[in-house]
Amino acid sequence: MNTFMQKYYQLKVQKTEYVTPTIKTFTFASESEKLPHFGAGSHISLKLPMGKRQYSLINDPLQDESEYTIAVKNVGTEGGGSSFLHHHVKPGETIEVASPENYFQIRTEARRHLFLAAGIGITPFLSMMAFLSHTGQSFDLYYAGSSASECAFYSTIKKRYPDQAHFYFMEREQKEKELQNVLRNQCIGTHIYICGPSAFMDHYITYCKGLGYPDENIHSERFRPSSTIQNPKAFQVTEEQSAKTLYVNSNQSLLEALIDEGITVPYACRMGVCGTCEVEVCNGSVLHNETFLTEEEKKEKMLACVSRGEGAITIKV
Image (cartoon, rainbow, N blue to C red; front, side, top):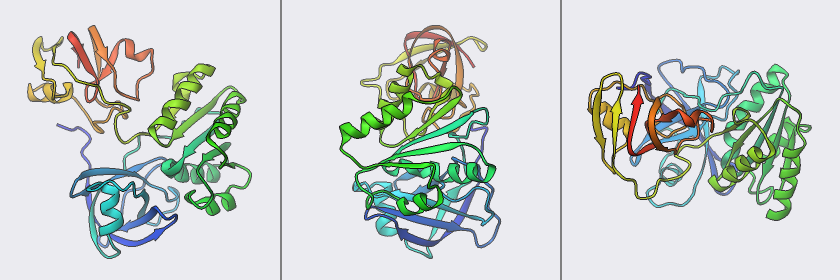
């Protein structure tokens, strides 16, 4: 069972707007009840015909407008969530929307916040920058795109944050060189937040680690696991406290196997990003597939939703 039960709301689409030829905003509001407040970096989940899809909230978390706004890039995948929203969801229609969640929070201990965005990865930073601007905290945005016309919210960001926003529209090699120079010249206590295509995030997360940034100073947001374990194999797991031994099939997650066995494990995202389903690893080898744990934590912990044991492991829930 999920110990973090979300409430779902029937929300009406108030308006939609194209901000680039491929990116469209959707604003939702309730006609019958007040919506929960949300923090900077939060996202909502929409129940769509093809399943649940997550999108970052882009409106100001400190403005009580009781509405939620998202921006969605149409990636052109037939039957995908983005294509459905772009082509079939119009103002006046109703969508079932879950209460906000936040796995990409502003770190209050940071001396400085550095946002590194590419493409539609700008979305979580819009609420973050609004919040930090209100509270007078130090931040800078480094936003990589193909051109100003394809850069979502370019004019708005440039107008609101003229001193903090930096745009990179040059060739890829030059862009990479410039961004690496930015990352090399930061003060101690800077926290890095990265969002964009998986290859972009993987590259700069690795680069930051190579520069010596502590794992706890590097943050990223993904709405799916960072990678897929190729040809997953069945494995055996013993839960130390209950002394139960069970087998996890190749097409089954450890979390699913534990729940089926009646072992209570809290969970939320099921994507390896929130850390809710963290369990202690007492013995054995683990194939990690999450983005939440640090390298040091991976030595003795795993996330049951996406990571797998090799052969036989012992855990403690």
